[in-house]
Length: 303
Image (cartoon, rainbow, N blue to C red; front, side, top):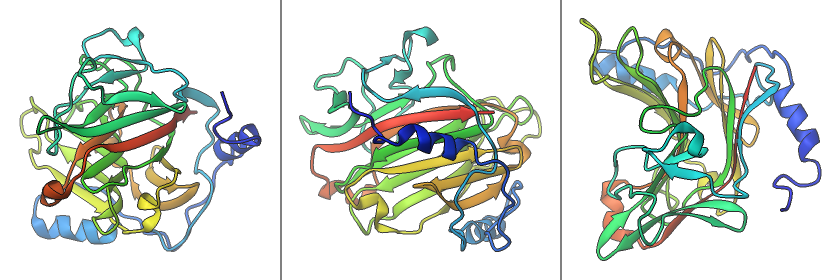
């Protein structure tokens, strides 16, 4: 199997994960997280969460432990009901969102396959019904791979056709104190240029069994730079660093945005997701089957 990063991959790896502590640039777009209960407060947060003026390279921390790796030389996927030891990924692993249902692992034709040494997640229309694909690093019992602090990255080519909603994202387990869970969208892309483009975002979601007095308001903030990178029909690396204080987003090794990591994002570990769904609703009639998302590798480094 070929090296997925070329001849200098090992040297590049050392540089990426061992840069040490770097002070935040003075003109970075930084915001403090809190619970926003009014539309005005939420709008103010969204306005502050922007692409950074400075394109800083290098991580804030040093991470020497390769805690998770999948280069998709083989397909390691199990049904979501299987034990954590069955595979690296589980399907479907999430209830359907968007307009393409997430099928079981044994659906035919399959939406989970290998192609040229990479993972191919396919959204397709079969007998008039749209099906997407969703993988989780934990099974239905939340058993599997999770992490709380470190750096995660994916090398992938997002779906290029209209209607393909590609994503590499994470959600935390429900908080033991608030009942809520955090969502960190490392990269989202709505296929075809002009339809939102490349996006990173954060969410807080109410839990199914909240403690007394806990907030039940869902809120989110995102950055939509509308860059052509996500739809240029090539591979890019999208990363996210979780420190005690920061959630930092990276694209091709360059920081794009950051937010402070409040307590709501700090008290439960995160699971990984790879998804191609159908969205947004307004382009469904224009979607053409099949729509493919290709993933070359996923890695997580921890301290």
